[in-house]
Length: 170
Length: 297
Image (tube, rainbow over all chains, first blue to last red; front, side, top):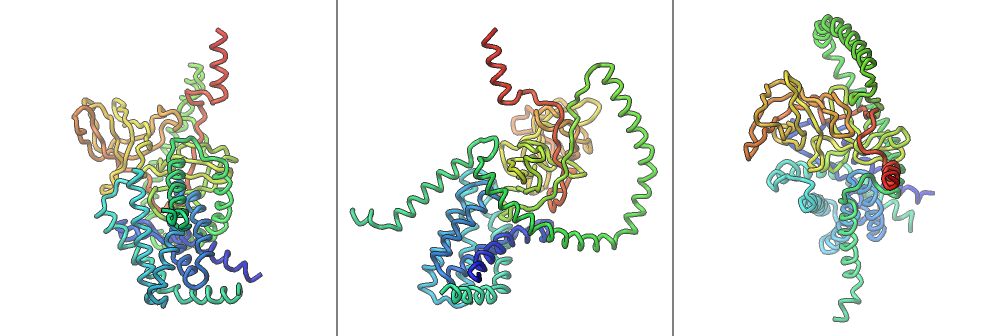
């Protein structure tokens, strides 16, 4: 029964991105910045570090697939990038110690990486005409600030939740 | 190199890159609507999204209401001044509508490009990665919504339906960067000027209306509406007002910058317009029929 809490937690994180968009006015800061919530990605990476890497990869595939179909309509992007990021992160945490401050840097790196990859893909398929400078100033910085704040608030509860779930599963 | 092929990870990586390219190619195709597995996934995800976003928007609109309450007095004073004009306008509109209906009857031309049936819808999600200017609404095929229908708010046109599933549809806003995102429009004035709405100026936040003949005179502040000539949009939906007119790069046509009447941000409730007059092309099954009949001739 308690094992159902893991998918439930991930589903909540999955929808939290779009719910954040409902609350957050797009006209905030006069529309000068485009902060993008990457809460699900952060949760997924915490899962990879504190729970289990292979389960996180499976969740990455599944929810990446849902994200592509439901929100963007460009199939394959998140489906491929989310598991890749899980893999990269798990390698990085093996070299560096997986403490919360170190993980903060790693997760910010991952968030920047996914933004860059999605931007690159959009330029490649000509779905956007945004220049790189514009992308960096309008989007990248705002995204890092927003998701950094999210991590600072939710890192400890998420870590405790995943450690607890790991005990339940073992 | 035999060890290259025993490297499981490399094979998985290569396989997924091929899959990625194939899937992107598949979804970038010029297609009318999404396939049924996609529709199914959209319906299931949309169901969950509905459960999550309806209470969330209720909480949000409560805070909005509280904020609005503070400006009630000023708003009321302004609205009262408009109210007197409104009574006159309303009687004019009913009179003209009646005239129009009678004249149409005389001409035996009952259908008009301007007729449409609005379907109310609530925005349940906005694309969280904010690249494509897509929103998801809670009405779908079961309410008669089909791809390419016009989507508007009370103040004007905001976009068109991109794809539909049984209970949800995805709407592409006019501000999206997509070369296929074109709307046939007209500028109202002494003589009507036709053009195409295509593209959005991100910096100035204006729509670009292109292909305006270079000899036509357009004044600042003239209203821009849909022309109904594109085939799917009804005629007369408000798009915005002209703010600037610039010649295009070859000097053959002009481009007008149009201030959109509706805000593309923070949308909550929208209307999807079902055009009543059938489009020029018959439905696909009917087309087949036409071909067969022609063969018989």
